[in-house]
Image (cartoon, rainbow, N blue to C red; front, side, top):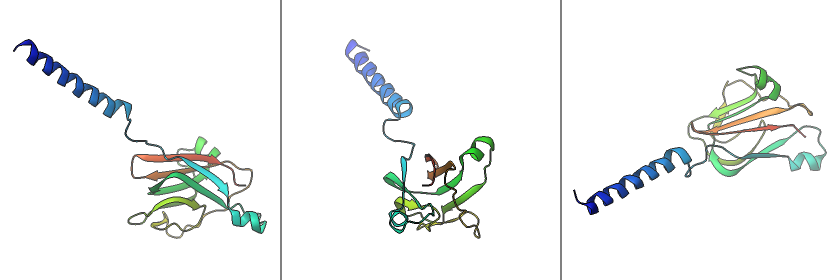
Length: 145
């Protein structure tokens, strides 16, 4: 093998290793977190309602497979906290960019068929957990307004 062939082979090996490093270790092509923020419902603000109507928004539209709300303290102290609201994908979840706590979401159903969302108490910390597929997840600690 002459020097030119050896140089070409070493450059190809170096490029392959750099590509593998970027693909598996830097994870530069995908984000594994769903960015979430929340606000009080405009209807509850305008109507002067005391009921905490919370709307959750995502920075990108995604097809959610699971939404769960638990008390933050319960999540810190228990491996399996009590879910105040837990819905899962029915068949094919519809892409969504926002939803209201406790409201029906297209393509999703309660994990337990007869379960109803429990009311949120003002001043209590809650934890929202969302999933889209198996690898895309997000969490948000919030208080109802």
